[in-house]
Length: 524
Image (cartoon, rainbow, N blue to C red; front, side):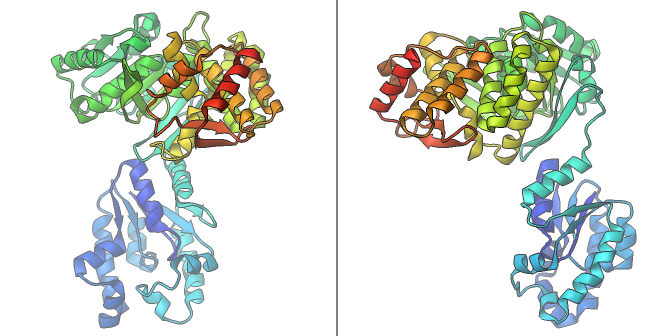
């Protein structure tokens, strides 16, 4: 049980709802529950029967709520002062939301339904309550000037500490669709079962993988008994992202009587993560999903955030859902292996995150560039961690791409069009996204958004990573490919930069601007 206490205006109800959503638990506001049961407002109860009457009802309701250990509860500002409630709280996690008096008054803004505001000496009541809140608290969170979602994430990080993984790192991803850890580090493949929640209780573990990752798949499967494992093999390339493949996997799962509480585990590159995620979101109307990305592009980018999709002949990733995993386990030693596919595609995504992150992020990747080109394990680990940290922060704030998550498509609109025109596979080859970012940079320069030096920053970064920065692209064919982009809205919508680390979304371009940019892309 997580119980939020604090003075009125601290944000207990708002923060509590967010924490409950992130934990997948029910949320109850004790004051709201009392009003619903009584059929009248707390102010009316105070006016008609006095405070002792209300406190008696409050004590009984809180006692009932605290018997359920699966909920997040926000208590009224005065509830914690009741000695009996205080004793009941001793066996629960009590989060004290601290708020300065002036800010509390500003937030509630003279709410007429709060009985305390109808009396004099509110500041003295505030000062008298603070020591009580502090004495009961097992966790103290400062809310001064902070957004509710930021406060909620701090609470989650304290409530759900990461596992101890020497030489590795874990970052908590907090979205409405699910809260989970993304782990990164060498040799994590061999402890995967320990990092997947409820793996020991699932009757079946469905492992979707590809032949080229048989060593990793065997290591994961060996951590579960043979009778529990359902192994499904598929090709890990873009042509496998079809309805037919989804149907074949679903039929195998149905034959083995896989249930909703079982776990789907995707072991492989970007395509495997996409397909496993879509299957998990659809089969039994939704199942737990764990991802063990083996390629650099999947570890640094696509395994995080819950996006999954299949393609149609008319365009890429047109059919999909957002279904958050319960764990992402990135064994960076696997991605760094010589010959492991998807490496240059991963470098392109790492470069993209740096360009979106700003000049310090670009400098950091440039410092790692030689090591990354040589597939040095330490450099790969550091780059994956940086990219995961960057993407996780955006996904936590914008799960469903209603705002800044769209920035992660930088270079992708051009890149997907180039991929469609050339037949290259962007999940394996970094060329489409790298060239796409250069095209976007040239276009931004044409529109006066980027300086020539900013364009050169793109080129230096991509060159340092061994990626392509020039290409010849036909304008008419490019515009035809743009029509198939899922973000098309009465014209192609582009992510551009107004400076390194300053992305803007929904931008358009004239045919003349595109022509000049494509000419520069082929020449410069």
